[in-house]
Picture 1 (cartoon, rainbow, N blue to C red):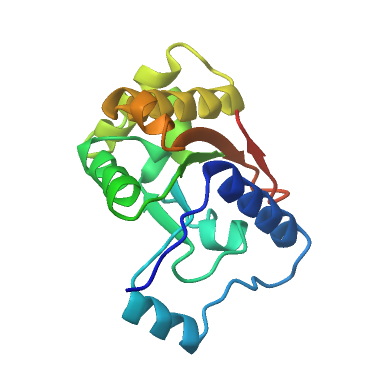
Picture 2 (picture 1 turned 90 degrees about the vertical axis):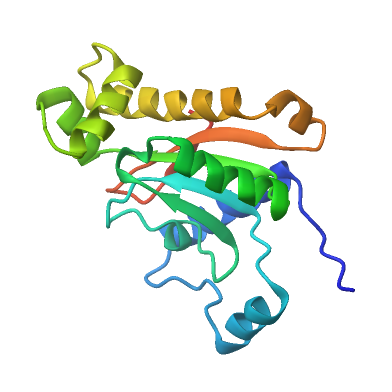
Length: 190
């Protein structure tokens, strides 16, 4: 039987930070997407080192932002990086079944969903997303601050939905981060 070494949340965070530095200074992503890596993950399963909950925005590509390859990140994407039972179920799966220790809620500046919550009153299914963001940001009108408040709100939902303090004994950590579209830089622990 293959023994899989799970890495700590702090080790995973350092890998993400190093990957983001490589991304900022690179012209192309160098995450491992090789045929060998595809075969390895197919035959031996996935062993991601971080869960990334982020926006569906096409300019926010976690595998590139963190210079990661196949099997490195467990990515959950939804407009405005809002949390509901579906996202929570995905987080729970990755944490409990795959042994991932780091959960990162990754917001970004110039978020269309946050802008819609601040400046518009959409209808249809989009309203489910903007209503959740409005609950997170209250009366905040500054787009960047609203993005940060929205990330913190999602962190709160995660922390209230899991027995986080019990899991912290096993090294589980939840943090917020903000991706800057212009520079590619990620600010952690927002």
